[in-house]
Length: 223
Image (cartoon, rainbow, N blue to C red; front, top):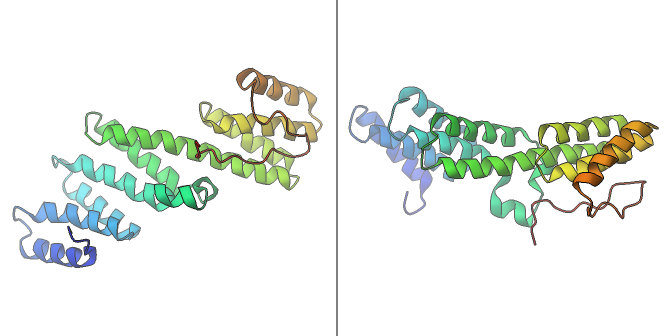
C-alpha cells in the first residue's frame, strides 16, 4: 500500500482475510481493501467493499471512515479536484455521481456528527450543492439556446427553488427573465427580473442583450 502497489495489496489483504477471518487484522484488511480499490479508480469494487464492511460491522469504531470513503468514491468519480480545474467543468457531466456523493456525505453527517471526517464532509456537501445547482443552469441554458423556452424557464426556476443560496441562482434568475420574455409572459418576466435585480444589482449579466444569455463564467474559477 505504502508503495502504491494497490492491486498487489488487494490480493494480499484478500489472502489475509481468507486465512484468518476471525483474526485481529481481518476487519482492518477489509477497510484497506476498500481504500485500495478506491486508489485504483475501481469505483464498483470500492463501493462493494465499503457496503460489505458497513453491513458486516455496523458498530465498528471506525465505521464512520467507511461512510466517508463512500462519499469520496462518488465524489472523485464525478469531480476530482485537479481534473476539473484544468479540463471539463464537472457540472456539465451526468449528475448521478454528484447526487450519490451528496447523499453519502449527508448520511455521514447525520449518523456521525462528531466524527473527525464530518467537517470535511460538510465542506464537500456545500461544494456539491453548488455543482448540482450549476448543472440545472447548464440544462436551462441548453434549452434556451435551442428555443425550448418553457423548458428553460422551468429548469431555471427549479434551480432557484432547490438551491436558493447557490451562486448559480444568479444566472438561473437571469435565464428565467429571458425565457419568460420569449414566451410572451410579461408578468412572470417582470417578477423574475425584480427578484434578479434586488438580489444581484451589480450582476455581470446585466449588460448582456436580450437575445441570449451572457457568456458563461465558470462558477468554480475564483481567479
